[in-house]
Image 1: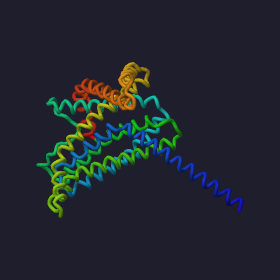
Image 2: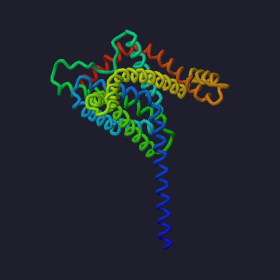
Image 3: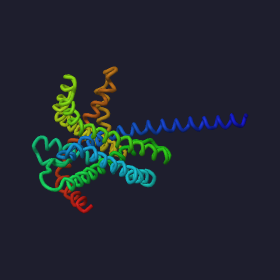
Image 4: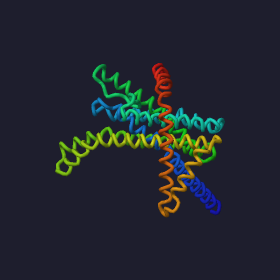
Length: 320
């Protein structure tokens, strides 16, 4: 009997340790995933454009195909690559983060420039389906969405990897896997809701039994264009903030802390004497200055991206 009780105690201790480990992984995954907010919002904002012009019956199957490929890429390609970098070449992570941060700054600045009437913009397909076979067009759009998602997923996984505290290999692997699954479910769950919201609103407006239901449906249909614009604005602001923050933190880690320290001191000074609001004020000033830095850097990167990077990427993806 004493042996059985000792065994049960050991099992209980192992179960408690496993539960603690799961909680630790979930907590680290949540913190790491939150650092990738800019890329996540951009992913959710860009993807619905790939469904424009297709029948409502094809929208969810397209979302599912893109989500499945996104999860496959994260787990099969990006997660092992991230773990290999962390184990064998951690010095490469800050430069890669700067590359991803620079891309976010470039994309955010170019979207602002496009909104102001400069350039042609980028980051999404057009909605023209006047010519060509629909099935072939769907294949092209899904393939294009998967390529765009791969870039954003690489940014998300790299940012998440850098945000994970130093731990053992299996903890990092489990945390990254949870980030991959959680963010993919979040992004493409949101995309599915966005692309079907107008259809749901139209159904409610035409078939609702109550006047309130029909009015709500009409409101959803009318609100969706404005919601999409708001989502793009929030996504652009998040890209500039996160991109600028990534660059500044990476520079600090690489031994160039001047600008990072200056922003920190300005934010602390602005929050002084604000009482309970000091934390929010410090965060807001830091985020605002990070975003302004991201915008300035993005403006500088626009001609480089448009004249060199985008044509090179087009050639690479055309042969892929």
